Image (cartoon, rainbow, N blue to C red; front, side):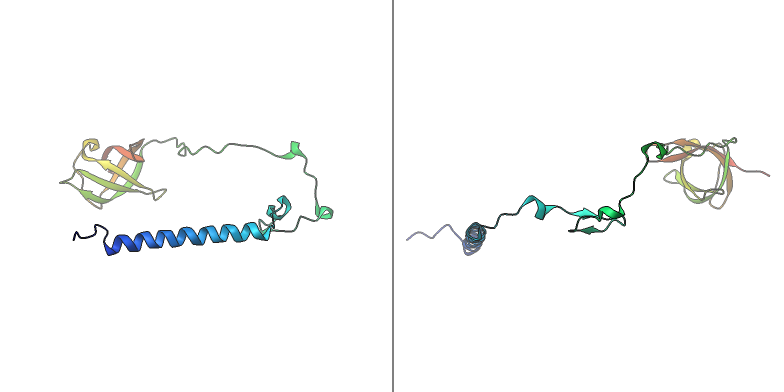
Length: 151
């Protein structure tokens, strides 16, 4: 006599799927037998002036008219602040000479800027104060022309 190819685990999975399918069909039949259809008005939600969602419509007495001409539309550009001096100063917070990169903490903005050894004009170390220029790198701002700052 040959052994069945269906294992106990496969039977359990098949039985669970069949049970779930039957339960879903029962729920569908129950909803259908209730005959209650959702109307469009039951599905509407309202938002008040504070952003709270409710099922009650807003009070028409509290309605205020807004003059469309008084609305100002502007576009905020995400460009860096334009300084008159492109050379910035900062402190090297991390530098890995073997891998050839590091990070500078800007003195004014506190921003963390990446730099690569190819952009160094002279040797630097951690905690050195440096001057540099910012350019757009692959993953964000990058420092170029990095050199020690001498007062």
